[in-house]
Image (cartoon, rainbow, N blue to C red; front, side):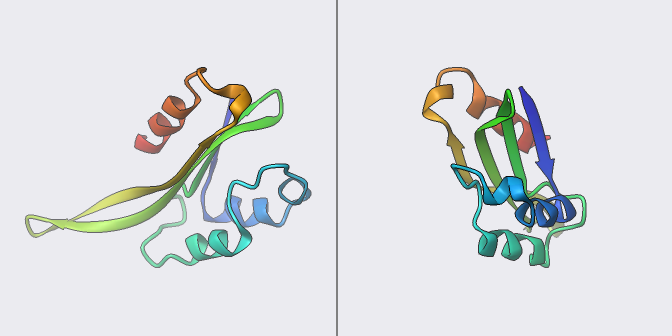
Length: 105
């Protein structure tokens, strides 16, 4: 299994790629990706999209929206999991668990 972590720059490159245009399952719309990239609360290296591949075929993805919340007079960085998907052919293999583990990192 290969895990790809897409930050702002990598997400912009991804949605401009032939790979993205030719995907049978789209992990994020171009409009939503651009919205995530422009999120004023995200930083350059924040992970916005986690993709997981098996033999060069995407079998799962998880979207993350960076944000900040106030806890006891302190701003804490958080990430909201906005979407998760696992291919029917990859169910029962721990894909969703791995995606969530990557999000927590």
